[in-house]
Length: 340
Image (cartoon, rainbow, N blue to C red; front, top):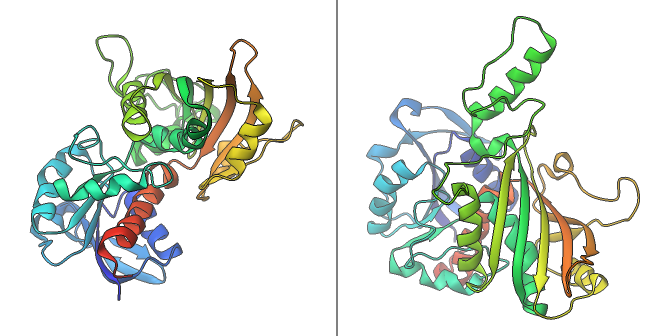
């Protein structure tokens, strides 16, 4: 016996990836609905060897449906998620709307699976920000061993995190570099992204950090431990898919790099590729389409009494969004609904 599952925002990058992953992981589904805005009604999307036509989200009745995976913006989520939750359908939301609500669990299954039981407070579970998701997968097993005091992270985030329009902008600006007269002005980003890096993701806040940087701080505290200090610099880079992060970790207790490497090798959701030779590390183009969070460049920080540096790479459309949502659905099924 399987579940009745709705995918909301099925025509977008993350929605389509959710459908791919539900099929790849053979999630037990008896019935699936693909939903989108009225203007996208009837758009065809793939689900395994089937082609499905999207239904109008505004007219959809969530009564009798087990789960709804939301891959739409906060405005649409604010309107439709409470409607689904009130109808008895558990919402797994990829937007930022509910992440900081104390009555909504923010889940990365490798890190805080027990928190899923909080879902019943609002019938909603939040999916973290893409940059946070891969980082906490790496931090949690190390924190369990040596307790993390402070994290300094610099991100190198692909344009797919901004949606299809950003992917098109990078592609068209790149082509324009080689075809005189076909240059493309920046519209998605405040500056040109092709052959450039932009130290600005989301809006600026009063203290000088961007909202993306603030998210990494707040979400790490909520998922792992509120006592961890985090400072982030988030940068958009001219990569289509795959986020990378350089992470510096300071621990309360001494942790040797060799032990850190072994802990990470044995931890769920992680693949360690860490050879001290040319090419002995993972880059974002190599992680596309994979489920894992890849860890490389593990080494002692000689400037701290107990510090480790590492390089963390993951497919942001998968672990940073769609995969984590499906993993939450699997967790919810095992712990609560117990149909599959």
